[in-house]
Image (cartoon, protein in one colour):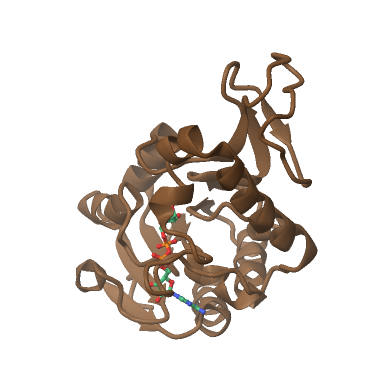
Length: 240
Ligand code: OAD
């Protein structure tokens, strides 16, 4: 780690790569298909309007895989342990819609692309916890109408969540760490640049060099379960 003094405020951004070793497929490592679907067929408001049954079935399958099969891996656990032991400010921003960070024990966490285990009424914006399948014609509890419940997921063309809080944290942090993200999707792909412009040291931890790797001050390559723990344990050691 090349920071001159121990950081007081850390922002970590995670992407699909951190959950890959929990058995959840990444978006861009499978010939452009996500669980055999083109993104535009399942992850846009237009897709939901045109074929709500298909979209609900797609997310029902992702939800049941998450609930029944996936477990946090060592990288999720190492991040949560670091947050517990670290004395400075720590914010974890994830692009992932799984709940593996929470299950590992992460506390100060923002799901900027929504959450798979939540659904939302498209009419009233009421959010409900949900671990079971959603049928697209089922009646919504708040408005009583059929077809209004949608996955609480930020689809392409929609605005990510918590952006004010995220930009504030990026402007204040002195260390920004990006883990397991390809840097293809904005605004998250631009976070490194903002943090750097405001003076943060920026680090990428990824299986391979991402699209924007050359902009980072430091890049470490390898599987998340190996490199995340090593990096954050070393950082903690510099704190004491
Ligand atoms: P991607 O699938 O684009 O990128 C995953 C990254 O993780 C790649 O750079 C891989 O090299 C890396 N990776 C794979 N396995 C890894 C491992 N074991 N350890 C470390 N790194 C590994 O996923 P994201 O960048 O998260 O948005 O994609 C960003 C957004 O695009 C997603 O949140 C989603 C998608 O469309 C929405 O759904 C709105």
